[in-house]
Image (tube, rainbow, N blue to C red; front, side, top):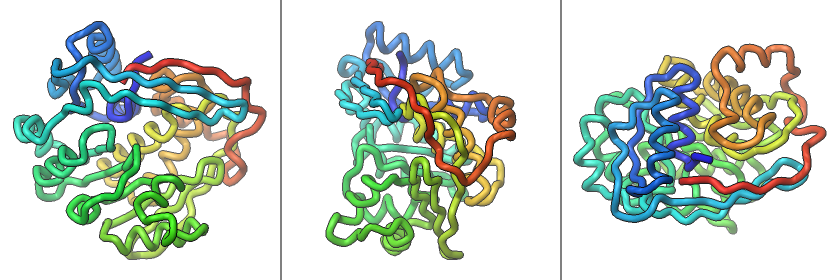
Length: 286
């Protein structure tokens, strides 16, 4: 099935009602055409998706009995999205109220995205797969969105400690304007100059966490673009992620805004994963 972090986030945002465009690179092959078709079907503007340079990237995903996933990625064409590609698409970047990026594209390309942001636009980064980040990128993040593993890679294991609030404060000290630490079934934390605040989880029966982080990031970016505060956007994003983990797969699990509203009967603040299904494995086109 179609996937990849950027593509997933574009589909998740569009399904919620956001006007969304994607800048990426795919191969000139059947997988690339599948990815383009999935973007169009979700309502994403695919004009920024470039073709060629390498075969379309792929990933192997396994899901264990608790619903958690492990992913092995071959980046393919997406690993060849260059700073020059960003400069050629500067109009698309500068027309965006919120620009969301991840690290399945080269880091130097992310740097070029930051350099092409329009004044007043907001940059959201999920540094996955994680690696140390230059100050220029960190200082643009509003927010930087990390899980435990990503936080520790950016901070350095010896400096990170074990307390998520410490991770949030230490990450803020590196320069981001705001930070979100996702904690799976325990919810999340939001941190800014105003302090650190918890975001409660939503109780659901988790089946498959594949794509849940992407749906969270997409929903948060969309709500920030609509003017929500960081805490409000993160709380809404937690609800979107909660719906996504009750379904198998990545893009096919992403909810509409109406489906998120229908989650209103669930109880916040409780563990986010109960009675998980059996393990499964699947391939994903990147």
